[in-house]
Image 1 (cartoon, rainbow, N blue to C red):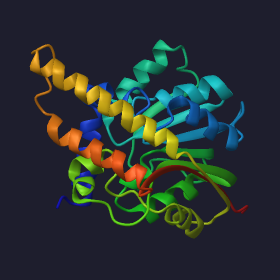
Image 2 (image 1 turned 120 degrees about the vertical axis):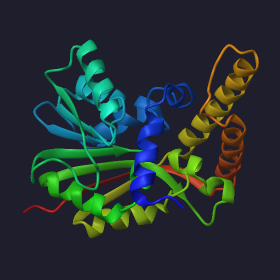
Image 3 (image 1 turned 45 degrees about the horizontal axis):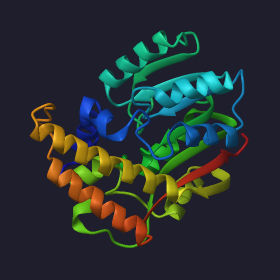
Image 4 (image 1 turned 30 degrees about the vertical axis):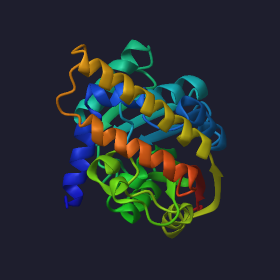
Length: 264
């Protein structure tokens, strides 16, 4: 079994691959930018606010948040390469004055206390090995009264072995937690006024799309029109099929979790 640090490094390295974008799409999370915008609405983002996007990846959500709500966004990701690519995307979008990206670990955020008005983390919290520490870090960098928004996979009961593999971990499935457990981590870190929304249909749609992309990728590889030397397509298809069944059985879902930190 990989150590916590190995798991984090493996996830970061795999998300850098072009095939990850090919299979997962631009947003890398269920619901795409529509749920990112929903999160911004619930967090009541507006011009003048400073927002931290944890595990920002290539910056797709950060760009959308900055453009839609007019706030200043800082994105951080464990991968230095992803942060570099996100910086390029911000420049190409003409948003460099509103957005910055830098490498950083969610469990050791490289920011001073009381720095942000809001923190968001999409489909990544479940991959953090030390979730209580990550939640405390969110609280530390938030200003009094600041808001937090998480979106993540949820689980009920035990998952089959293929959904507890390294590939399933990278896909944010293996360590998905019950909805109440996410709320508990935030509450223990000092968050109150916690609300949740379930969006299981968004996860079902994303898995359906991934299965279609896997079939297309398998065909292109067979025709030698696509090379994916570091991808086990058969294993990926097995994980996707099992995930689809787990969603139908009510064992896997997707939710947004919101809260606000106490004043003072």
